Image 1 (spheres, rainbow, N blue to C red):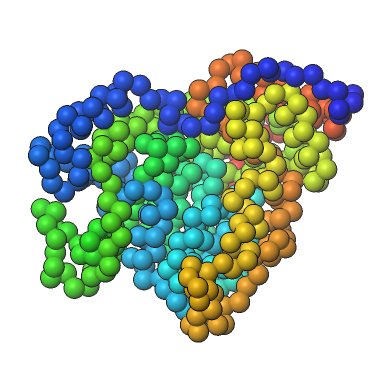
Image 2: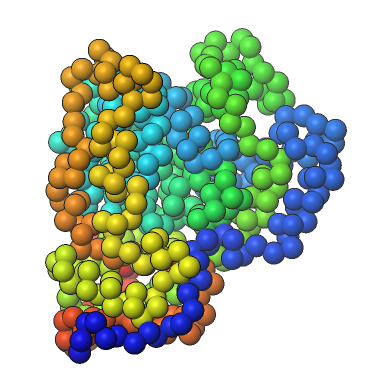
Amino acid sequence: MSLDLEKPIRTRPLPDEFPGVHSMDEDEAEAAIRIIRSKSLYRYYGVHPQHEVSSFEEEFARFLEARHVLAVTSGTSALHVALSALKIGPGDEVIVPAYMWVSVVAAVVNLGAIPVLAEIDDTFGLDPRDVERRITPRTAGIVAVHMNGCAVNIHRLAEVARRNGIFLLEDCAQCVGATVGGQRVGTFGDMAIFSFQLNKNMTVGEAGAVVTNDERLYRKAVAVHDAGYSRGLDEDLQMDDIASYSWGRGVRLDELRAAVLRVQLGKVETTISRMRRSKNRILESLYAHQQLSFRRRVDAAGDTSCFLLTIFPDRDSARQVNRLMRQHGIATKSPDTSNVLLANYGMHIYSNIPALVQKTGTDKRGFPWTLAENRDSVYSYAHGACPASDDLFERTQLLVVPSCLTAQDEDDIVESFHRALDAVFGSVAAPANRFTAGECLITPCG
């Protein structure tokens, strides 16, 4: 079969990713209208206070089984608040994965610390062994990013952090609702952050949250996100809480978005179940192709299933299959983010972040790279800094799994995969019953 003469399977795009958006209906509209009619959009006071932000924080804390949740304006602001609460600054190093989103390194750099890249493993999160190798006397902590809806090897990373006396911050921006052994991501480290931006499992367009079980860190986070001082149970400023003094960033969430988030939180489990059903159906059809392997899931039952990562034996076969599937029409209206080779996945890849590669400063002095406190923290961020990750990026295809796929959409994806794989590799069946339910730590699975 010619690799250049493939006929389309679809003539219209697949649905866009936006998981939470697909569940929106009149419930969210009514919540928003109610807050507008109250004329009280600020969380701490108003004409007729609705207490939506504090209610969301309590409900999300119950959902996670965490002690403290602090709602903020974005996932990026959540990273800044959390790292500020952890007292990150000049002279510190923070270990981050080669696969992330630019906001992770931005938060570290903006606070005057130096990001240190570490390799990812087949969970597509930090490789605990490589993290251990990157620790220096200047290492303050680790940011473990749960990418593409599925948890990383968080137990091992927590063990590394504890053994070395450094913090563990979980970035759960792409992983709202995921679990490991029944425990929600975001509750394994010292702190965690979440995002409710448009692409996330639950959304209000832009918002975030900081999570911790540590009372001291929580009070500090409240001060940072607000006016520089913590607040009491009555939400009054605590001017005598000297240990929490800070310089506030003013990233408080408003009542309007919190009201919509409360509705979205009630729907997130249904949203995840829809994606899980679609992903599992597609995955099961691919197990017969022995040439493929898949992102390892530490706990398959806890995967939110918003993405499917397929790993090929080499760069060329990955490119060929991806090109054929795109010719088949397997893409959304935003094809550059829906069915792509991971190496081309924009600023999720460390070497695709120009400001990081070039060590761009935040001021005319080149802060923080030129600070005397950081003179011993000299690292390269150019392609090749994480060779094992670079190889994985080149051989991996990322496919978005929207939360509203129809049976026909799934059929089209499955047909495209099989046609492309057969064209590139030939039709080769694997032994029957190669995979079993829950077989995730030993046998690769999606």
